[in-house]
Length: 318
Image (cartoon, rainbow, N blue to C red; front, side):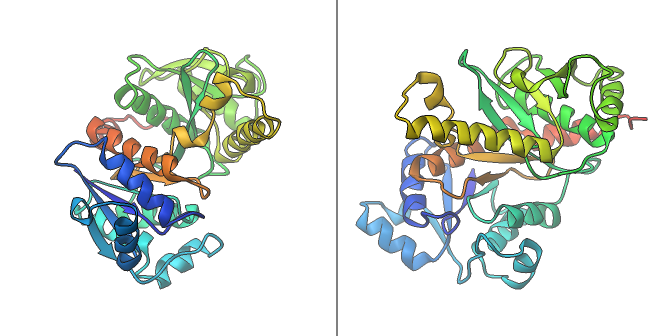
């Protein structure tokens, strides 16, 4: 397995990225390789200063970076030798099994859409995120920011993508899928969620339990919660802000610590033809390590091929 790692993406790259790669390497199999994509001179100097062995990695030199504030499509088009563009080029040519970056999220989405491309039948790929529950489990939320507006059939597909991910990556045999709304009754919600509810309850492609509310991110009612990206991103940022406020106040709690983004590393982009993970811009070494390990788990699960097979046989929703 070869995991491509953008060492230039993130506020604390490349140093924290290199440390994270060194930590991840210790947890990978002997025949797994991390391909460091970025400024090879900086990578080599950091490996030397940190006691790493460059022979344990593959280094791919790039001369450009895509900044966090750059326009994604323009940057992808113009910066052909950036770490993100080169990473996607290697991924689409199957020289990598996965690609991870904490760089420009928009550029990662554009690269996913136009380089490796959505799986045939997938209307829109989704960003997913794992949100811990107080009982030690977690819920998979999607979409968490890629698609601000969605039609009912897109939400239906998110439900299937989430169910397949929970089953094959995280080992939940029969994931319970809930649709986020402002009430449990099927009549509650926007016109889009009401229509999506109808599609989901008529389907046998996944275990749909009906509408769930915002509080159910913390309950054990659902394993997957589906919403459009606008709402999902608001939910995700609300959890992040709660965590940071509690930490600033010096409050220590086992559940609170489980909410730290470092524990998850990156958010998978589901529905594209190869594993792609996007990390937080403030990622540190631990987050980078977990991002790489998350990519390993998705590759090992064969998720992309499973999704491809499911969507080939998917009956179009009406």
